[in-house]
Image (cartoon, rainbow, N blue to C red; front, side, top):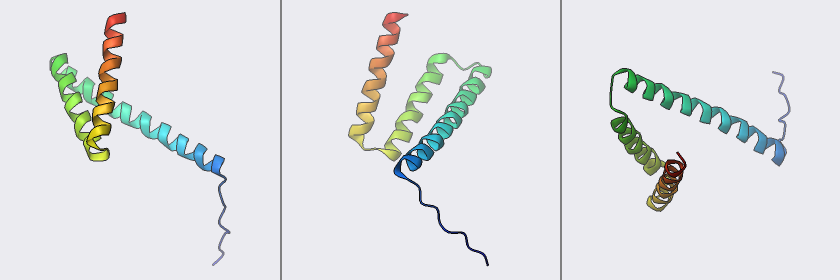
Length: 89
């Protein structure tokens, strides 16, 4: 069997590869959520109920991958961003 030598990645190459994978995963996640929202809208579910469901799912996902403090910090930042956008519009 012909074995190829392992290629070592530089720190920069590894970081660039991680960024590419993260960007791809982010796009796939956003598309999946957008598809779900569109599905709910086609079912004539009221926008506030869709937003509530999204918030509850966000909390569930965050709790499975972060500590309570991190979840609370993230949600506060999200709320602040929403308040800022509401004030502008």
